Amino acid sequence: MSTEEQMTFDQEPEPSSFRLIATLGVAGFLSGLVLVSSYLWTKPTIDANKAEEQRQAIFRVLPGTADFETFTLQDGQLQTATGPAEDRVFLGRDANAGFTGFAITGEEPGFSDIVTVIVGYHPADQAIIGYQVLDCKETPGLGDKIIRNEGFLANFSHLVVDPEIVLVKNGTKKQPNEVDGITGATISSRTVVNLLNKAMTKWKGPIDAYLQAHPELEKTTGHE
Amino acid sequence: MPTCKLIPNWKKRPAMSNKVIGSQNMQEFLKGLWKENPVFVAVLGMCPSLAVTNSAINGLAMGLATTFVLIGSSILVSLLRKVIPKQVRITTYIVIIATFVTVVDFTLQAYFPDIHKALGAFISLIVVNCLILARQESFASKNGQWRSFLDASGMGLGFTFALFTLGAIREVLGNGSLFGVSLFGKAFEPWIVMILPPGGFFVLGFLLLLFNWSAQRRKQRKMQTA
Image 1: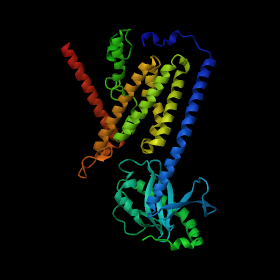
Image 2 (image 1 turned 180 degrees about the horizontal axis):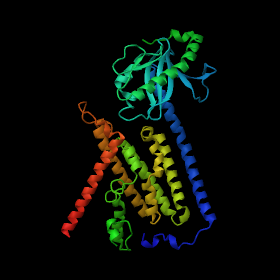
Image 3 (image 1 turned 30 degrees about the horizontal axis):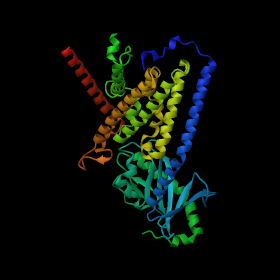
Image 4 (image 1 turned 60 degrees about the vertical axis):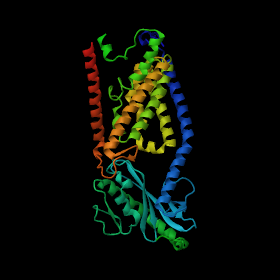
């Protein structure tokens, strides 16, 4: 490639408006084609990734779970979810089809962006028995401790949700409904507590009603 | 022209023999790695350089994603340089760049979901990385596709090298690990500030200092020998 190939813009005649519009039109059209095909190409994998991530999270927050059913809220009652729904809870079952609890997701704006958490709820104990952060963009090194700080995670091995969960200063947890906060991540800790209280207020009634209507589930409860 | 000497490869030199052209091509590739490094010398693309370099793997992934977009759009812009009227060239370049970026975005989301999660919104922001538009405007739109490819790969790898260096230093100091592998054991108290935004400025500042210092020494040595 030599210097002759260098573009000398100034010597070119002024192109017609049609040419300008056509160039942009063709560029936009081709770009659209590429975008649509790559979207269609990757979408199944992306959806599968998300579903798999959620599946793994359900198994983690409900110990012993081997399978689950998906429910959605309709007129204040739990209904088996048929299609993709916004509001969903998951009823976990162990290998012998015994009831292991409900997996509930909740979201709440944190220090930066929305924090999404999934917890395992054990209705007989009225307690949260498992916890995992699904989505969180909190400050690295401070707020993101809500993901894997061991002291903080220990709160959720058996956290009573009735009466309401209360956030206390780190190291002062005495009651079964209190959460030991993380020093330096007060806002993120509070976000998690608010999110759980909101989720429990929303789902506790429908879940209790569902369990009353299906007494056989209570009997198979095998936790602790 | 004295200004040309300051930026050696900025303006093209007169036509030369095949051998010289070969070494010139090599120069087009190499300049981006060190002498005209987009981050440490040209100080372009600061937003991703500071924002996503809190770990080595994030820096590396961001650098490679940018390199892919840069190479793809440079070749395309170079191929189309006589077709695109100059009045709409910037718009067309942006359309081309944005298309590549979105493809990268989807691909990472599908096949490397963890990296996509870590880089978040910064993937889409590759579109407005001025390093990419600068290479289209100042190089690919005036040179053949082979030279544009060399230029883009050099610049892209230089950018990747810079982001990886920043990320590695910040991860080692701020988290005591490299690629997630703990280096110092439990006794090490991490300097959390290094993985927070201020750490990005500190490390970048020190690296710029280092680069300028070495450039100055090179110049001095040249003057002494001359």
